[in-house]
Amino acid sequence: MPKKIVRPNGFAPKKARAMGDMNVTPFIDVLLVLLIMLILAIPVQTHQTTVDLPTDKPCPQCVLDPETNTVFITANDELLWNGAAVTRDQLRTQVAAASAMEEQPLLRFEPAALASYDTSARTIALIKEEGAQTFAFVGNAQHKDFGS
Image (cartoon, rainbow, N blue to C red; front, side):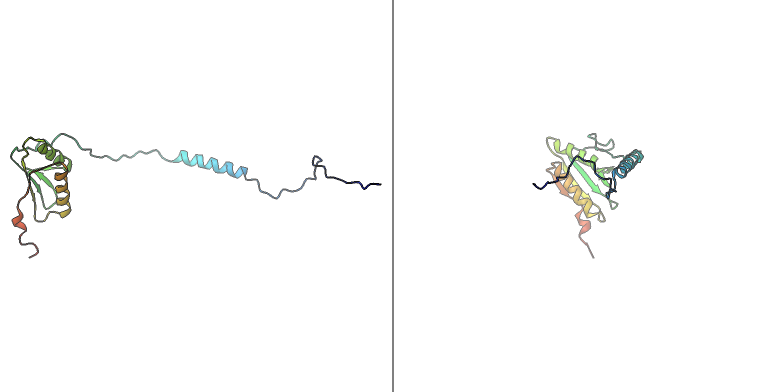
């Protein structure tokens, strides 16, 4: 008689065994709830930073002379245009207005003896960027005894 072959039945119920893997679904659910609570708990931005934006209007106390204008830097690194205190943006506007004139006025650059080199260099770059063609350094005699 032929030998009977027994094949395992994949559809037959198996004996219940303890599962060795941990169920992570509740853990993930708790993490998602905590994440949503954290997102909702972040405060809304209530502070603001004010920024002074440049204007195209020249300063009211600044006067544009059609012949000669002086840019002076004080020892405290304050900018003066023909004796009136100006900001960098106002100086930029004044130099641009002077450069736009048909016959450009002479821009005299006069830093104080103790003025910052960085401020002086930035001011010269500003004047150059605005297209000033007639530019002169004045008051260099005060620097002749430098370091002595």
